[in-house]
Structures are given as C-alpha cells and as structure tokens.
Image (cartoon, rainbow, N blue to C red):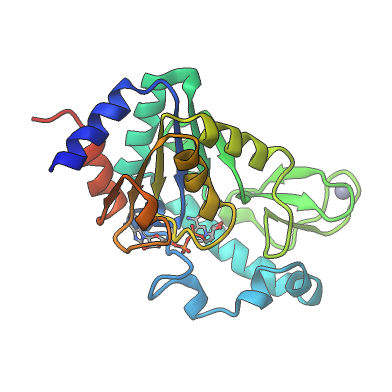
Length: 244
Ligand code: NAD
Ligand code: ZN
C-alpha cells in the first residue's frame, strides 16, 4: 500500500510527532469504550454518572460506579499499542507529545512520560472544596466515597465530566503540539467530542501529515492523509514495526 509506505517514511523522518488517543486504544486491554456497542453508556445513563449534577444528586452511587471502573482499570494491562507509542516517544524525545482522552493511566504504565491527560485520571480523587488530589488506595481497601485528608470534605473522581472545563493548560499544550507536528496520529477516538474533533484538523491546517487509526470511519476520516480502518494494535504494528 502506497499510503502506508509514505506514512512510515514520514514518521521515521519527523522530529515533531503528536498523538491523540481515545477509548479505542484501551479496548484491546478489556476496558470498554463509551459509545461502541456493548460500551459503557448502554447500561448507564450518562447524565447520572458523568455530570456534576449527577454527582451532587447521588455521590455514593457515582462513586460506586467509579470504584468499579477503577478496579477494572487496575486489573487491565497495557497492550502492544500502548507499548509501541512508548517506544516511539523514546525514539523522538522532546519532539513527542501524547495527548489522551483516556482516564485509565495505561499509557503511563506502558512507559510513556510526555503525556497530557485531557480528561483527568480515574486513579485519583479530588477534594470538592480545596482541590487537593490524592491517588485512590488499592481497590481491595477502597471504601468510597473518599474524604479529603486536608479538610475532611467529600472528594470526587479527578476526571472531567460533561460540561466541565479541561485541566488548566492541558488544551493549550495539546494544541501547540498538534499545530507544530510534522506527523499527527489520531487513534481510537470517535472524534465527536471536542477538542479531539479539532486537534487533527489543526495539524492538517498547519501542514502536518495526519494519520488516523480506527476500525470505523470518523468525521476526521475525510481530512486524514492516511486512514487505517483497523484496530489500534494492528494499525500501529503496521505503521511502526520494522518490516520483517
Ligand atoms: P468513544 O467511546 O467515543 O470512541 C471510541 C472509538 O474507538 C470509536 O471510534 C471506535 O470505533 C474506536 N475503537 C473501538 N475499538 C478500537 C480498537 N481496537 N482500536 C482502535 N479504535 C477502536 O471514546 P472517546 O472518543 O475516547 O471519548 C469518550 C470519552 O470517554 C473520553 O473522553 C474518555 O474520557 C472516556 N472514556 C475513557 C476510557 C478509558 O480511559 N479507557 C474508556 C471509556 C471512556
Ligand atoms: Zn479538601
């Protein structure tokens, strides 16, 4: 495939690479996405569990759901797609940035260091009063809802809910990386939620080479230079692994 060869050469030559990942990259690790069939929203009402209003109404119930997801995430392992991105970072160094919408911490567990978590982390709690954050205890000893060690107030999951702002500086850092990237990779995101929808476009407009990996077409597909219609593990292996 001609496009694939060009993409491989571009990645090899690039010194500035920006990557955006979504729930799809963690699906092969057994963590369900939100929107796919069998995804999390089929069984849960989004507005009850992932909004500030839902939490205010029933913090115990919201925490039960997060504690369950947290336990699953802790059991899951990074997959070859996470590992390949950590290797790419090791090759590119300072010119590399990985932006993720995932809250599962699997990129860091695979060895990625230059990571921007746009939507926070399910591994942490944050005080609803003073903002103090803390890692959750191991799932076996975790009894939600947690209280702040500093001020005793109820804590919430340290994630971004619908209608909330992204963590300070995260978007700016992501946008700068995508605007300057020679190659941008968008993997496993439906590209429906902002800012995921616009980061890939930003690279394109600035003259970057845009690659998408997703088994399904997305709104980004028509603008991508190469769109691999396959899973993250298979797609990244074809792009990044030395040919045998
Ligand atoms: P999404 O659920 O909207 O979309 C997932 C995308 O992954 C889809 O486009 C689907 O076609 C694709 N996909 C499915 N299997 C794949 C595979 N094997 N390889 C590559 N792609 C695959 O997820 P989203 O766009 O990331 O956004 C929803 C929000 O849900 C995010 O903001 C995130 O915070 C949250 N979320 C996080 C996790 C996680 O941390 N693992 C899991 C579920 C949801
Ligand atoms: Zn506090």
